[in-house]
Length: 169
Image (cartoon, rainbow, N blue to C red):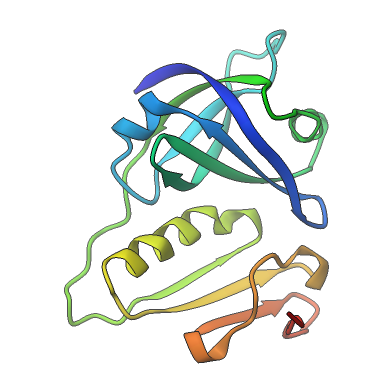
């Protein structure tokens, strides 16, 4: 586990009140071992609480990591105001990875909302390992969906209000 002062590379809104933040994090990304791990972020330098905010790692590419978060209160609102070039102190990687499965198993990955971040990371690992799978993604409503419904590729979307989302290209 490493405490690392990182540089924010991007911070983009990807759906209604849902954001993806990418960090240049060479030390944490080097220690990262797989989907399911998370980081703790110090929201700002004058954060007055003893604990940082835990955020699931959504992806690791080279020396960069990303998180997906939803604006729920003051802390995530302040994160949404961060700009590329700003710094953030991270602690990580923390936690275990998903359990490995036998090659004859057909995994069905299920997740929703911002809890989808580690599932998307696991999806990337399945893609890299050429593992066939299906993914079921849920959200409160269609404005919170940020992945395309694609049954041909076994990606299925649903919302709490019963809408199956199909987006035009």
